[in-house]
Length: 91
Image 1 (cartoon, rainbow, N blue to C red):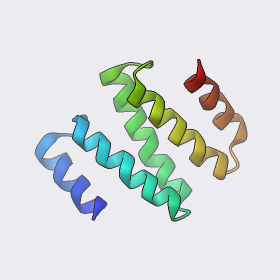
Image 2 (image 1 turned 180 degrees about the vertical axis):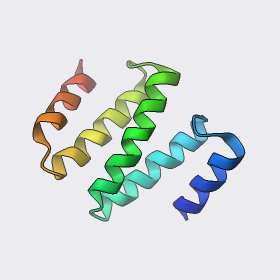
Image 3 (image 1 turned 90 degrees about the vertical axis):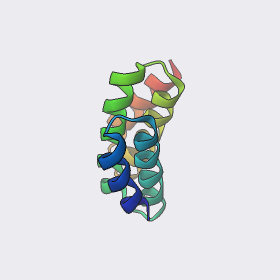
Image 4 (image 1 turned 90 degrees about the horizontal axis):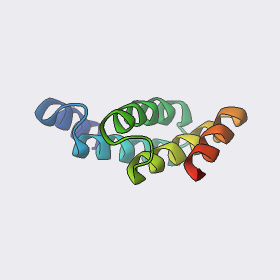
C-alpha cells in the first residue's frame, strides 16, 4: 500500500512535497522493519536529499531522516557512515 500511495503522491503532489516525503519515510521504515535495509537506504537517501534542499540541515524532520538512514546503514554494516550521520544528528 505504501508503494501505491507513494506513486500517487509523486504523481499528484511531486517528489518534494511534504506529504510525499512522509510517505517515502514511512515506506522506508516498513522496509527497515522487514529487514530490507538496502531498499530502505535508497529511500532514506532520496528523502534526505529533498529534506536538506527544502527544509535545511537543522530542521527536525531532516534530523529524523538522518537518524533513520543511520539506522539502516548500521544494519548494513556501514558503521563509519552510520556513525558520521549519528553525530550529525546530535550536533
